Image 1 (cartoon, one colour):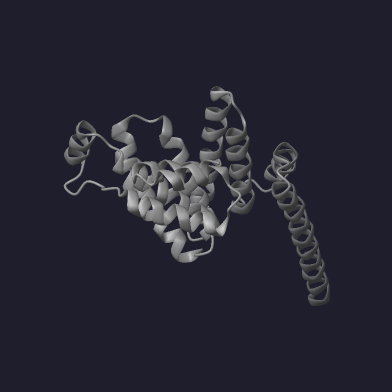
Image 2: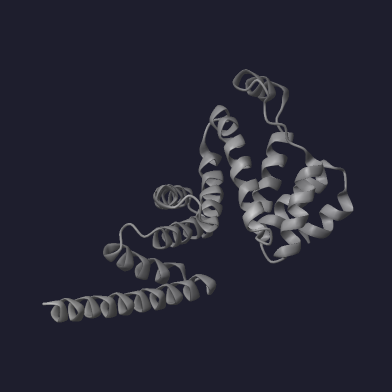
Length: 224
Protein backbone atom coordinates (compact mmCIF):
# COMPACT_ATOMS: atom_id res chain seq x y z
CA UNK A 1 0.00 0.00 0.00
CA UNK A 2 2.77 2.39 0.95
CA UNK A 3 4.57 1.59 -2.30
CA UNK A 4 1.41 2.23 -4.36
CA UNK A 5 0.77 5.50 -2.53
CA UNK A 6 4.33 6.67 -3.17
CA UNK A 7 3.97 5.79 -6.85
CA UNK A 8 0.66 7.68 -7.04
CA UNK A 9 2.15 10.75 -5.36
CA UNK A 10 5.14 10.57 -7.72
CA UNK A 11 2.90 10.53 -10.80
CA UNK A 12 0.78 13.40 -9.47
CA UNK A 13 3.95 15.43 -8.87
CA UNK A 14 5.20 14.69 -12.40
CA UNK A 15 1.87 15.74 -13.90
CA UNK A 16 1.87 18.95 -11.83
CA UNK A 17 5.40 19.78 -13.04
CA UNK A 18 4.41 19.14 -16.66
CA UNK A 19 1.31 21.34 -16.34
CA UNK A 20 3.42 24.12 -14.78
CA UNK A 21 5.96 23.94 -17.61
CA UNK A 22 3.24 24.00 -20.29
CA UNK A 23 1.47 26.86 -18.52
CA UNK A 24 4.74 28.83 -18.30
CA UNK A 25 5.41 28.24 -22.00
CA UNK A 26 1.90 29.40 -22.87
CA UNK A 27 2.41 32.66 -20.98
CA UNK A 28 5.75 33.20 -22.73
CA UNK A 29 3.95 32.81 -26.05
CA UNK A 30 1.30 35.32 -24.93
CA UNK A 31 3.91 37.77 -23.64
CA UNK A 32 5.74 37.66 -26.96
CA UNK A 33 2.50 38.53 -28.75
CA UNK A 34 1.91 41.39 -26.32
CA UNK A 35 5.45 42.63 -26.98
CA UNK A 36 4.79 42.42 -30.73
CA UNK A 37 1.43 44.22 -30.22
CA UNK A 38 -0.51 41.26 -31.63
CA UNK A 39 -3.36 41.90 -29.26
CA UNK A 40 -6.13 39.95 -30.98
CA UNK A 41 -3.92 36.86 -31.27
CA UNK A 42 -2.92 37.17 -27.61
CA UNK A 43 -6.57 37.57 -26.66
CA UNK A 44 -7.49 34.23 -28.29
CA UNK A 45 -4.72 32.38 -26.44
CA UNK A 46 -5.59 34.03 -23.14
CA UNK A 47 -9.28 33.22 -23.42
CA UNK A 48 -8.39 29.56 -23.93
CA UNK A 49 -6.09 29.65 -20.91
CA UNK A 50 -8.75 31.41 -18.87
CA UNK A 51 -11.22 28.61 -19.64
CA UNK A 52 -8.78 26.17 -18.00
CA UNK A 53 -7.52 28.45 -15.23
CA UNK A 54 -10.35 30.91 -14.47
CA UNK A 55 -8.84 32.11 -11.19
CA UNK A 56 -5.25 32.67 -12.23
CA UNK A 57 -4.40 36.31 -11.61
CA UNK A 58 -1.55 36.27 -14.15
CA UNK A 59 -3.93 35.30 -16.96
CA UNK A 60 -6.57 37.76 -15.78
CA UNK A 61 -4.00 40.56 -15.70
CA UNK A 62 -2.88 39.81 -19.25
CA UNK A 63 -6.50 39.65 -20.45
CA UNK A 64 -7.00 43.07 -18.92
CA UNK A 65 -3.90 44.41 -20.68
CA UNK A 66 -5.08 43.01 -24.03
CA UNK A 67 -8.50 44.65 -23.79
CA UNK A 68 -6.95 47.90 -22.56
CA UNK A 69 -4.77 48.14 -25.67
CA UNK A 70 -7.54 47.05 -28.04
CA UNK A 71 -9.56 49.93 -26.61
CA UNK A 72 -6.60 52.30 -26.94
CA UNK A 73 -5.99 51.44 -30.60
CA UNK A 74 -9.54 51.96 -31.87
CA UNK A 75 -11.04 55.22 -33.11
CA UNK A 76 -14.56 54.00 -32.31
CA UNK A 77 -15.69 55.29 -28.93
CA UNK A 78 -18.13 52.43 -28.33
CA UNK A 79 -15.42 49.79 -28.87
CA UNK A 80 -13.02 51.73 -26.66
CA UNK A 81 -15.56 51.94 -23.83
CA UNK A 82 -16.56 48.26 -24.13
CA UNK A 83 -12.95 47.09 -23.98
CA UNK A 84 -12.11 49.42 -21.11
CA UNK A 85 -15.04 47.99 -19.13
CA UNK A 86 -13.94 44.42 -19.87
CA UNK A 87 -10.35 45.27 -18.95
CA UNK A 88 -11.56 46.68 -15.62
CA UNK A 89 -13.58 43.52 -14.87
CA UNK A 90 -10.55 41.30 -15.45
CA UNK A 91 -8.10 43.44 -13.48
CA UNK A 92 -10.56 43.85 -10.60
CA UNK A 93 -10.75 40.07 -10.29
CA UNK A 94 -6.97 39.78 -10.50
CA UNK A 95 -6.67 42.46 -7.81
CA UNK A 96 -9.03 40.53 -5.53
CA UNK A 97 -6.90 37.41 -6.00
CA UNK A 98 -3.52 39.06 -5.46
CA UNK A 99 -3.45 42.75 -4.63
CA UNK A 100 0.18 42.59 -3.49
CA UNK A 101 1.58 41.72 -6.90
CA UNK A 102 3.12 44.95 -8.29
CA UNK A 103 2.06 44.19 -11.88
CA UNK A 104 -1.54 43.61 -10.79
CA UNK A 105 -1.51 46.85 -8.80
CA UNK A 106 0.08 48.71 -11.70
CA UNK A 107 -2.52 47.63 -14.25
CA UNK A 108 -5.34 48.13 -11.78
CA UNK A 109 -4.15 51.73 -11.41
CA UNK A 110 -3.72 52.22 -15.17
CA UNK A 111 -7.16 50.87 -16.05
CA UNK A 112 -8.95 52.52 -13.13
CA UNK A 113 -7.53 55.82 -14.39
CA UNK A 114 -8.87 55.02 -17.85
CA UNK A 115 -12.36 54.11 -16.63
CA UNK A 116 -12.94 57.41 -14.84
CA UNK A 117 -12.43 59.44 -18.02
CA UNK A 118 -16.11 58.92 -18.83
CA UNK A 119 -17.33 59.54 -15.28
CA UNK A 120 -18.83 62.79 -14.05
CA UNK A 121 -16.59 65.33 -12.33
CA UNK A 122 -17.64 64.30 -8.83
CA UNK A 123 -16.71 60.64 -9.44
CA UNK A 124 -13.41 61.65 -11.02
CA UNK A 125 -12.48 63.72 -7.99
CA UNK A 126 -13.61 61.02 -5.55
CA UNK A 127 -11.46 58.40 -7.27
CA UNK A 128 -8.47 60.67 -7.83
CA UNK A 129 -6.98 60.17 -4.37
CA UNK A 130 -7.28 56.39 -4.76
CA UNK A 131 -5.43 56.56 -8.08
CA UNK A 132 -2.69 58.74 -6.58
CA UNK A 133 -2.28 56.35 -3.63
CA UNK A 134 -2.00 53.26 -5.85
CA UNK A 135 0.32 54.96 -8.36
CA UNK A 136 2.74 55.95 -5.59
CA UNK A 137 2.67 52.39 -4.24
CA UNK A 138 3.54 51.02 -7.68
CA UNK A 139 6.40 53.51 -8.10
CA UNK A 140 7.84 52.30 -4.80
CA UNK A 141 7.68 48.70 -6.04
CA UNK A 142 8.55 49.33 -9.71
CA UNK A 143 10.73 52.48 -9.77
CA UNK A 144 11.82 51.91 -13.39
CA UNK A 145 8.32 51.41 -14.84
CA UNK A 146 7.07 54.37 -16.84
CA UNK A 147 3.32 53.80 -16.54
CA UNK A 148 2.58 55.17 -13.09
CA UNK A 149 4.84 58.19 -13.59
CA UNK A 150 2.64 58.92 -16.59
CA UNK A 151 -0.51 58.43 -14.52
CA UNK A 152 0.69 60.76 -11.77
CA UNK A 153 1.67 63.32 -14.39
CA UNK A 154 -1.84 63.23 -15.85
CA UNK A 155 -3.30 63.27 -12.31
CA UNK A 156 -1.49 66.50 -11.45
CA UNK A 157 -2.29 68.05 -14.84
CA UNK A 158 -6.01 67.34 -14.62
CA UNK A 159 -6.36 68.57 -11.03
CA UNK A 160 -4.27 71.68 -11.69
CA UNK A 161 -6.54 72.42 -14.68
CA UNK A 162 -9.76 72.44 -12.63
CA UNK A 163 -11.71 75.68 -12.76
CA UNK A 164 -13.13 77.55 -9.72
CA UNK A 165 -16.51 75.76 -9.85
CA UNK A 166 -14.85 72.34 -9.96
CA UNK A 167 -12.59 73.27 -7.06
CA UNK A 168 -15.65 74.18 -5.02
CA UNK A 169 -17.07 70.72 -5.72
CA UNK A 170 -13.78 69.19 -4.60
CA UNK A 171 -13.83 71.18 -1.38
CA UNK A 172 -17.36 69.90 -0.66
CA UNK A 173 -16.29 66.28 -1.15
CA UNK A 174 -13.01 66.41 0.80
CA UNK A 175 -11.96 68.27 3.93
CA UNK A 176 -8.56 68.32 2.21
CA UNK A 177 -9.32 68.24 -1.54
CA UNK A 178 -6.65 66.81 -3.86
CA UNK A 179 -4.45 69.52 -5.35
CA UNK A 180 -2.61 69.22 -8.65
CA UNK A 181 0.50 71.00 -9.81
CA UNK A 182 1.75 71.62 -13.36
CA UNK A 183 5.32 71.55 -12.05
CA UNK A 184 4.74 68.12 -10.52
CA UNK A 185 3.00 67.00 -13.72
CA UNK A 186 6.12 68.05 -15.61
CA UNK A 187 8.37 66.16 -13.17
CA UNK A 188 6.45 62.88 -13.43
CA UNK A 189 5.93 63.06 -17.21
CA UNK A 190 9.59 63.87 -17.87
CA UNK A 191 10.52 60.92 -15.65
CA UNK A 192 8.15 58.67 -17.63
CA UNK A 193 9.47 59.81 -21.00
CA UNK A 194 13.06 59.30 -19.88
CA UNK A 195 12.27 55.64 -19.11
CA UNK A 196 10.28 55.12 -22.31
CA UNK A 197 10.68 57.82 -24.99
CA UNK A 198 8.50 55.93 -27.49
CA UNK A 199 5.05 56.24 -25.93
CA UNK A 200 3.07 58.94 -27.72
CA UNK A 201 0.67 59.52 -24.82
CA UNK A 202 3.48 60.80 -22.61
CA UNK A 203 4.62 63.21 -25.32
CA UNK A 204 1.08 64.56 -25.61
CA UNK A 205 0.60 65.20 -21.89
CA UNK A 206 4.08 66.63 -21.45
CA UNK A 207 3.48 68.99 -24.37
CA UNK A 208 0.19 70.12 -22.83
CA UNK A 209 1.96 70.65 -19.50
CA UNK A 210 4.67 72.78 -21.12
CA UNK A 211 1.95 74.98 -22.60
CA UNK A 212 0.39 75.47 -19.15
CA UNK A 213 3.83 76.48 -17.85
CA UNK A 214 4.33 78.90 -20.79
CA UNK A 215 7.28 76.86 -22.00
CA UNK A 216 6.24 77.09 -25.64
CA UNK A 217 9.54 76.14 -27.26
CA UNK A 218 9.63 72.92 -25.24
CA UNK A 219 5.99 72.27 -26.14
CA UNK A 220 6.72 72.79 -29.84
CA UNK A 221 9.69 70.45 -29.68
CA UNK A 222 7.80 67.68 -27.86
CA UNK A 223 4.81 67.88 -30.23
CA UNK A 224 7.09 67.75 -33.24
